[in-house]
Length: 361
Image 1 (spheres, helix red, strand yellow):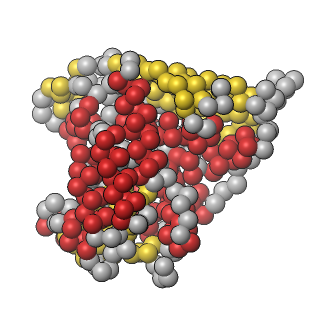
Image 2: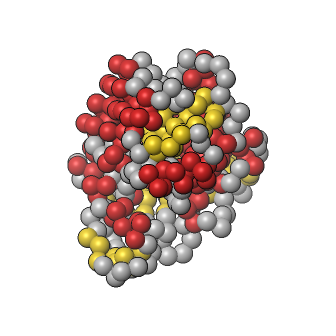
């Protein structure tokens, strides 16, 4: 593939959303991609998106966008229940796909999409961008080089401020419904499991518990009560293929300081990945914000910062940076024919892992 990779985005809401906040700035900052088409479900918003984002084409139909000759890559950034239909439209058109995580609402759907992507012979990436953080890359290299010896255990703690008040914005109401696929377990749980496996290897045993500790929420604009069915706390214990053990605690409704800390203990030292202080509390999530890296060594009384090299994405806004890094990696795959970006098969495995964790409790 020569020349810019031409991108069409499904779900390019001109007013708000992850496409506007992360994908489009990442595309605009890249020399490898060009935004050529946008789509929403209404003609007025599609036209507004075309004007705001500088695209050449606007659509209200996913198949029309996917089949257009000016589109090489279809990016899916809508609510999870629509992912199967829209990703399938792209695959049917023979186009490459980048779909946001979670890929689907069930493992069975993810398996079907993974099979369809293989049959189509295209690249199908999923938005698991945490593994492209510079601190994660450095930590993975240090572990592989034996810097901390044999990994014995790891502990993951990550909290979000979502739902820390009874009244919540109306546009977030759907995330309190478990069937939406957009709850704590599905979103942050999937990113966390992917990062654990990326850093430390496959998970062979898993037990978990998900629970709702804040069952009463209302839509702030109307006072309408929300039927909360999505868990806001998730705890898991895992054993890896290596024999190392991992504990995970994720929770919403953080009243104080949302934060992430991943501590990895080895026979010759420890590593810690921690969320950097940010004005935006959402940046405390391991897939969104900057992570700092530190190590502790035998006989040393303190944690020592580990230098992490900046890259061209480091100058971008925090929520854009990791997405831009995934796009950069994906561009290499598309041009070289490699398969290094997490794909629909990785997503299928994660969905199976999450369902096993939740259903076995």
